[in-house]
Image (cartoon, rainbow, N blue to C red; front, side, top):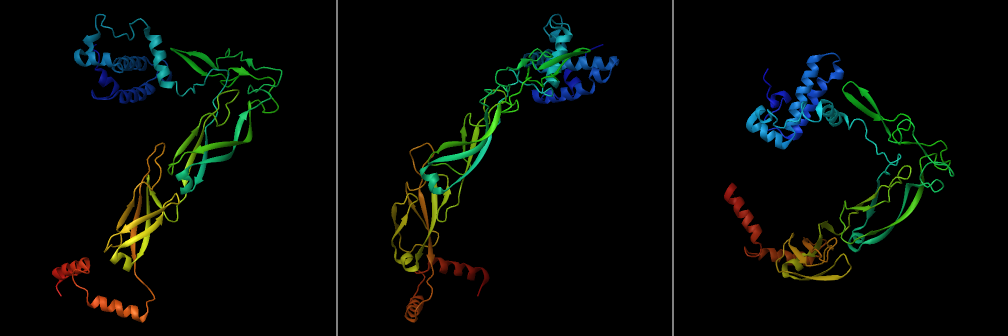
Length: 373
């Protein structure tokens, strides 16, 4: 009987990616797995067919040859490998089983049960001034450290962990089921490969204990909200002498009462008098570093006008440059006027012309044009 098209066997298109084919193969293989259908020859044939198709199409070179010549590319010693090749059906099935179920078996390291410690997260809030200048911060963090009496082994002083007799120190045991050799975690040592007969009383056999540690961390100038600082090896100690995890410090910057930040640039809003806006002049503001900055207000300045102080913003993280300080003007309407001040303003309004208030004049002219009187 002629072989079915490999793409048809897997239920995928010829443009499918390797990942898509792998997903389709896993789904189909699970449905017709021989262990699920004991004694069913059709299921076994179907599983072999799936395996053969997948072994071909998951290999880029074999897939290219198959796309060009079909099954003829592997006839008469063409190199399919598969069931008649050098490794044979048993080896092929073992590879596929590992591919299908290896991640489910919970692969543990086999270095005597030593496991890497967990990473830790510490949230720190700083001011905008501290983000500008940087700081050295002292932290106190509850964490797990290596137990000193047992030096992290988990065994009582004077004794040592023993190699697990069930798995021979591998942490895994193997069982044969039909075509497959199934590996699972050793039930005696829970995958550690070692047995502790006399656990350390100081750490109850874990090889670590919890204390509060004092650490110092340098926060560089220019850090932004959400910046993450990693301290390698400052996380929890590993189990039974395993390597320590890392400590991650997440920074958040408090809102500032005067300045808003956008990257390396700073923004602030400065109110000025109506007279200053009309006649122009000079204003003085303080930058975040405390220095005084003088800025020129142009004659006839309007609310929203921005002035820029170059290089007076935030430092660029791990750089030498600085951002800019942007000052937005806000023209303030005077309040609590005297009678004389009101008379002067009324006189000024009466003598105003189109040139005095061009924006207002233009606006009302357009309104009149659109809506009439």
